[in-house]
Amino acid sequence: MKKARENITIKVLILFVYDLITLMLSSMFALLIIGVNNFGETYYRYLPYIIIAMSCTVIVYFILKLYNSLWKYASVGEAIRLVVASISVLLVNTIMSISFGKPSMRWAVSFMFMQFLFACLARFGLRMYKNLKQGNLLKIHNVSKKKRVMI
View 1 (cartoon, rainbow, N blue to C red):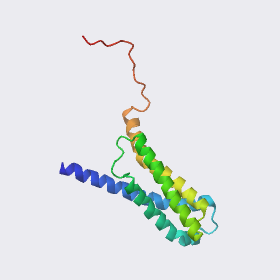
View 2 (view 1 turned 120 degrees about the vertical axis):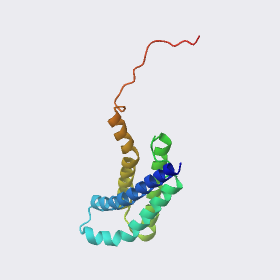
View 3 (view 1 turned 135 degrees about the horizontal axis):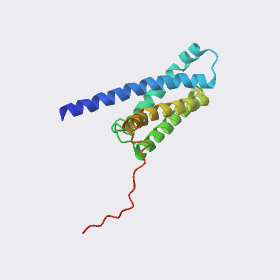
View 4 (view 1 turned 45 degrees about the horizontal axis):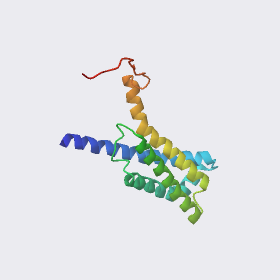
């Protein structure tokens, strides 16, 4: 039991670190998508907002319990929580954009989109990979036309 709990803790930690890395990548890709001229200087100017956006994203993930379920069996409920988390992050970024004038709304939407894609990749990609490896994803279940009767 103790080993299983340690296993879960390690998996949560790995997912948390993955989320932090992909949030940084999302912010970089968002800047590239909106077409900044001087990437290094712009990234340095956006850094406080990126840190706030990353912190808010992780907090929203914890509030919506996206780290409690390790997505072994990803379901519709977990996908809905992921969508709600992405929309919540977009709202936080929109409030920052309106309040401070930075980051731009284009960056906020691009960041949310990239963050959502990376989060889906982490949560659903592993499950799809395991199903493909086992041959279960494309397997059509054999439906027998025989009726079963209990006597």
